[in-house]
Image (cartoon, rainbow, N blue to C red; front, side, top):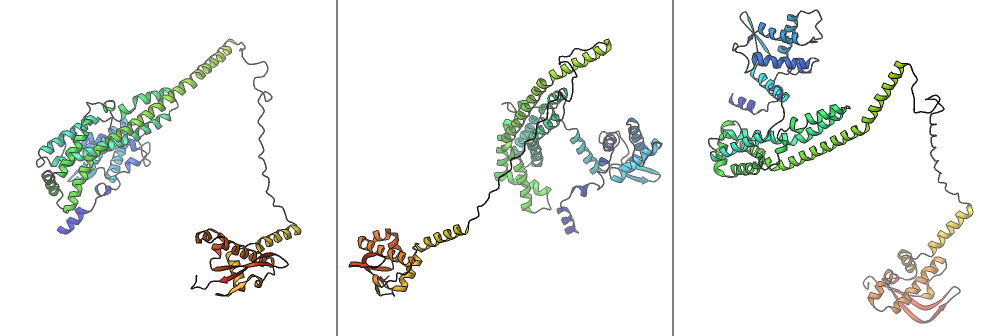
Length: 489
């Protein structure tokens, strides 16, 4: 049994775990505004804390329907879809009461021959919260900050006896910071609503009557002054940190948290305490919220002044001229005399007098990119040039293949013995002749490494000989090529 209660207490309750599931049905009906005013009326006169004294178990059914009949009489157009125009007033009141009972706003019970109607404490508290939200006006920041600072001072002096007030202070700080954080966005919403009004007088009235000082923060103009209680925000942060970090104060507050959260383990209780401290530490960010609010107010002011300037310059003269023209037309009609126009003679509006329309410009057509078609001769010449280029190309792979055909590893081959049959072999032979010539000029190893041709033939040793080798194609100095063995390399 105890374990079941602990699990039920540990379960996080949702909105409809506390409220009836159909409670929002009247507030979403076509008569939602009338239902809301009726609920507020019943709370004030029948069920609320300020209502006249009644029975503890509830009010009689007839007393509640009488209040509903008065509300139906005062408001025109209250009729549900299931009702007709000839439905008597008392039946309409009973049907409205039945709707409120079915949706969970009210509870009806029979005690003997009496039918009693009452409102549950949870629903009444929910109604009070909605009423406060609907009637919320401009807020005084100074008073809230002063209360938070004063209560924190009292808690710091006597943490043991004032521990119960710490959570309440943290909730007040959370509410204040959230309000400051959201005010900038609400200023923009007001400006968006005002811009929907196309009449200048309505815009002026809304801008000066529903602006920040009268809609959100009553003491907005004094927020930045030296005498505003927000100057205590750094003291609030210091006190909150001391209550968290000083062992005596922390333990005194945790004793209260453990006593009021008995079913939660120790680490969860400390997490709740840290959460409440973090809410107070957010006073460090107040300056950022105020800067954001100042930016929003400055932007809204500039937009309003630009809007008013445009309206005064663009429409005032046109409205006056239109009014003068209308008066002149009416006066001419009453006196039966022709009007004098500043336009030229003839018909005022004719098809010939209108400006001719602009001829649409044709979009320029994009020229297609045509690839010229090569003739057979051009194709043959292109392939011949490619073959000539490939025949004269000397790469490391080509020259290695040419040497491997003529010289075996560790042996020496004279230049006269190397085959020169094609243009390709001739190009490779000339490359070897040049490499042999460079090898005699570059004795330094570093110089040989800097020569690309010698670096490509590092596995070959060149030996120059006296005299020249001549044949039908060329005449070069005699040289020999020796392939180095792997051990030598």
